Image 1: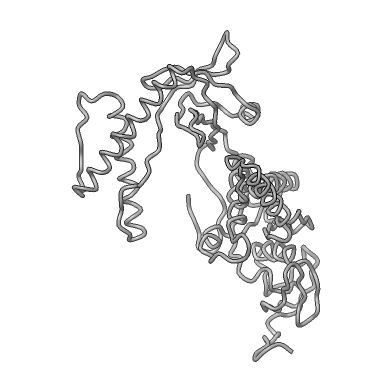
Image 2 (image 1 turned 135 degrees about the vertical axis):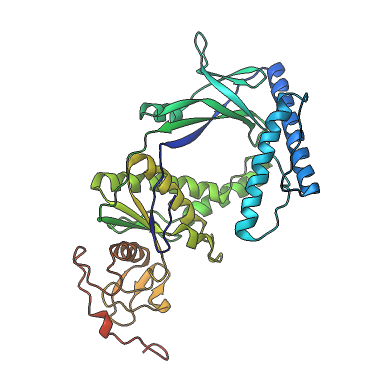
Length: 376
């Protein structure tokens, strides 16, 4: 993947691969055998990584001759962890330490089930063959032209149940920058705002509703049913991402979002921080890749405090959800303004050129003298 310093278009070679989770319905005997294999692999994996950290040798090797399949599989995973840790330490300059937690994970083969009420069989290497049922998301992916791989990863979910991650490969169409952009901005007060005039629901009611539900569940002693505030927002933003990509595909437009690397480095401010914007941008990239919609990531600085009429930028232009220019008194929605400025920056007309496509009559910004020493 190639990246440019200012902004970039999402490009990946080959097809796009998506993962889906299937629950495994194993009887007590098969479940016990599968858990035993997973635990054995984790023991060997931890031992090999710990031994590497103890020796610190660059050409570290270990022999698993005669120790069985689980040890051989764990050794290969250990080498991958050590290699990734070394590469990370080279880039960041930080020392590579052994991970504190190693997941329960194993490999398996997916087979189509026949003559039974289940949809698939998942066979461990070695180990039992366990049944699994499909679901709406996986069936929809296969109907859209995806191809189910015959390999799977077997692990355990947060409730301690055996699950299998299966993989579907899509033929990814080529994404072309059409030059016609649709800007997207995320905020707490407006949820999602687009440059075409769409303003979504705010995130505050979603956060408050989750807080009230958790408070009631605590009173009733249902602490195991508490829901994260982020989970509720993510579900809402996932639906918004689908609408954004669908709208861009219908109109043959290129989506413009805030640069994710910049958002990830921002200091946490406000009630929820920058993670909703990061989540929406990641989800948009995820969906647009399969549908052939181009996505550009743009530097977001100043987009919500810069007037689209006169070009005057000042942090006092914005008061919450309202934008009111201190120079020309232009009033608009702050998040909607940010989405339009993102689109203009992608088109190269922000903030020093006229945007004739959007019908915005801007002044000659080179002749505007910025205010100094306060606002009058």
